[in-house]
Amino acid sequence: MEPAFPFVHRRTELARIYCDALEGRGVLDFTSGLFLAAPRRTGKSTFLREDLIPVMRERGWEPVYVDLWSDRDREPGELIAGTIRKALDQQDGVVLKAAKRIGLDRLNVMGTLSLDLSKIGQPGGATLADALEQLRQQAGKPLALLVDEAQHALSTEGGTRTMFALKAARDRLNQGTGKFGLHLVMTGSNRDKLAHLVLRKSEPFYGAGITRFPLLDRGFVEAYAQWLNRQFAQGMEFPVEVLEQAFDLVGRRPEMLKRIVGEAVSEFGGAAALSAQLMENAKELQRRAWRDFESLYNTLTDSQKAVLDGVARLSPDYEPFSEEAHAAYQTLTGKRLAASSVQSALDALRDKELLWRAGRGTYAFEDDGLRAWYLEQHRDPPRLAPLDPD
Ligand SMILES: Nc1ncnc2c1ncn2[C@@H]1O[C@H](COP(=O)(O)OP(=O)(O)O)[C@@H](O)[C@H]1O
Ligand SMILES: [Mg+2]
Image 1: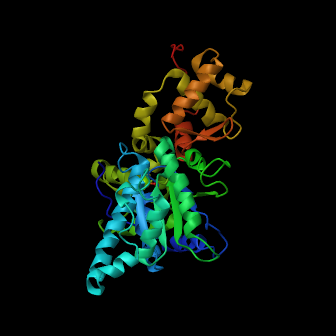
Image 2 (image 1 turned 135 degrees about the vertical axis):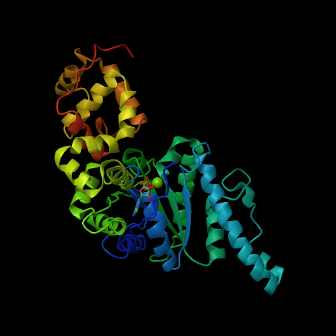
């Protein structure tokens, strides 16, 4: 596991804009849900935890957070139901205390104990909408349900059903203009997959849009520089410009920036070394930052490498089966790829979350930073050994 990153840059203003939009105030309208997409490790979860949830609390909402990647072995639908159950249990604690003071009869009148909450979302149990309605009543405030890595729900039938149930709950709890019982926020590292919640009539949140979550900006770099430079003697500090350049090189990922800064300090003698490296050998810096991708890349088959190269080079005009694309693949493999090999390579690359399907027959890098890095590494298409069958 990566060590904790003790520095946190806050984006309260962005959180306020999103909360306004969830209520339908302001220019943006997220009253049917906020669907945020950004590549992995760029700060989505941190933003929810450090910025969005605190602002929601400030507004008197009751936030309920669930990360579908927190336990990949658990059924996503069950994870969501379990989180709601836990929130209810906590509220029960509060209500029971109050009830002891006012007498238990009143509690039954409130309907608190009438639902079987142990089986939320299952046959014979309370529906998700019932459970959420009850939670809203007990909390006495609007709920905000935040589902992190929500696209993962679509990987199982139970998860998909849960998404439809959430939509039903949203419609039930939000009746009348300006009266909200349930705000929905969903994030995804895979825009393609997240889009499957909203694109088609048959999909649970049809009609809502996907919002590109802004990557960390100059404000982050400045705050990080300040935090970092407190630890260095005068004249040994990291200039903001240098950090910003390095941050760009690594796809604006805080952990990778931290990694190269750390290495600059421990192995190369500090800020001056990092500046020099940026000038002389940015490639080498990136290579170290992207080590994880490099090991994944090394496991790809030749046809997968060829297809990845084609997408990198030809985007945004890349079309998998065009003559141009075939010519690009052939430069790497030395012979023409069969259409079926192209298709299975595309599927495999999507599985590995390197590519996403931006629409019918259009593919793109899941992570633009990775594409830039790849092209930097491979100015010319790499020549691979003669194609082995796969
Ligand atoms: N605003 C921020 N300030 C400082 N560090 C951050 C910030 N946002 C993200 N990070 C760091 O970057 C890493 C990835 O962030 P995370 O929120 O888990 O990304 P995501 O949810 O998009 O995968 C974490 O180590 C986190 O501490
Ligand atoms: Mg996350």
